[in-house]
Image (cartoon, rainbow, N blue to C red; front, side, top):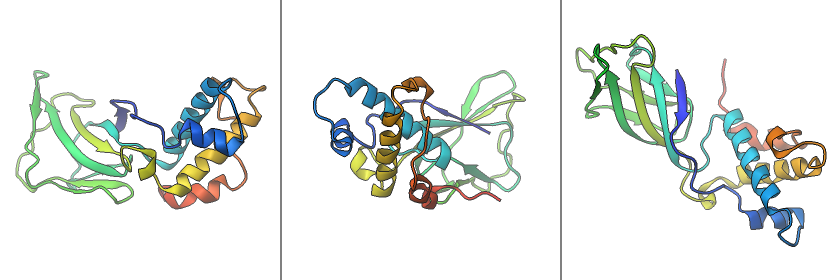
Length: 192
C-alpha cells in the first residue's frame, strides 16, 4: 500500500505572521527561511502522525482487493473518496461505481468499506493495479487545524530556528522541542 500526494496544500497551517509573532521577529529579512521551516515542521508532523493538516488530494495504490472488503487509509482525516480505478489486463483504466461504498473518514486509520457486490474486477497489473483517489485534511485553512497541532508546529519551528546557523533548511528538522511529543500524541495513530 502506497500513498502519493497529488497536489500540495493551498496554505500552511500556521502563517508567517503567526510564526514571526511567536519568535518575536520584526522585519522581513528571514521570511524565506521561516517559510521553509514552517513547511519542514508541517511535513514532519504529517509524516509522524499520519495526518494531512490542510485538505488536498492523495492517491492510494493497492495490489489486490482485501478479502474483508475494508480498505484502511492511513492518511487522514479523509474527507471524501473521489474515484476508484482498476487497471485491466490490457492496462486500460476502469472506474468503479462507488454506490454502496461506506467511508469512515474520521477513524484512525480511515476505512473504506466496499459494497458487497459479487465480482469486483481484479487488477490486471501485479503491482499498483488499484488506485483510490481521496481528499484528506482538517480543512482549507489553518483556522481548521486543531490549535494543539498548530502549537506543536510553532514550538518546532522555534527549535529549528535556533539551529539555523548549524543546519540548512533542507536538513531540518534538526531537533524536536521539549513537550512536542505530548502535543502531538493524541493525534498519532496507534499501532500494535
